[in-house]
Length: 364
Image 1 (cartoon, rainbow, N blue to C red):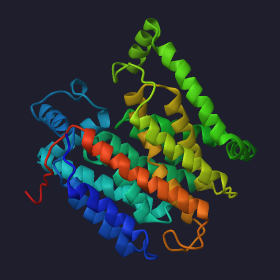
Image 2: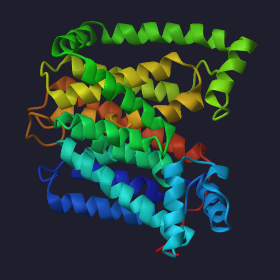
Image 3: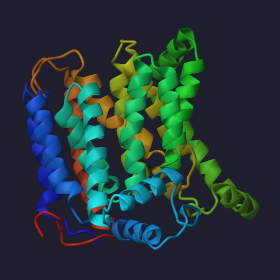
């Protein structure tokens, strides 16, 4: 199990402190946080999947076919390329995680009005994926690139990019599906959906929970369970879970993000797209009681919350963190989500299997 060492608390806490400052989105602050993250995390030797990815790298090295190893084609080709230019596993891992981190943080910097706060949420909610699940980390980072391109009006480019991410991890199918659906909708339809969420967003979450209970018992039926196992191709355990800590934490975030959204009257396209993808993804996660499978599948959607919260709280403000001009309701919600984030971080570090104590390639 991970040891709860200071490094895992120090970095997100530094980011939280930076979010107080009006210079939070300065270029200097961006590079300082990004480089510090790479030094702390990309160079770390921690992670539950560290040995697993090392084994994949070794399989390619001894001549195994890409088709014979676990993982999607895109990641396999990356390993082949790395070995062709003489990289060993350690260097490959560091380069891969560092480049992906720069991409992810660049998108947080572009889309979030409070970049350090977005990084705080990321390093408390998703840090296990940044140091363990390399393929999904690639999708989490680059899906933001293509969502941003879609908002800028480059729909074809965004769709092609999201399709390309399927060659790295299946979770790319969720943002791809949403972008395709969103593109097919008219402005009147998106406005109607916004009005529905404004009026019934919380009630709909309660209805989805009832649907989860129904699906839980349906999945207990052996024939249904067997068919679903074939569809999923044994990618995950098909034992349904009615309740879990992951469900509770994700639902708390969803609940308060809906509250924040209901106070917003803006039809900002970026907010509408981010919130729509997040809301639909999280309700799907709640509805289907396959905790591990749905949790992993929705991480590429859930990461949008790291942008949505600062976007809705700080979008039209130039105030200090929890400053006097921020609506009191937003201050309360933001404070609750920060506390929940620390609780989630503690839960991740105390329950994940990985290397302990913390070790780092640079620091020996």
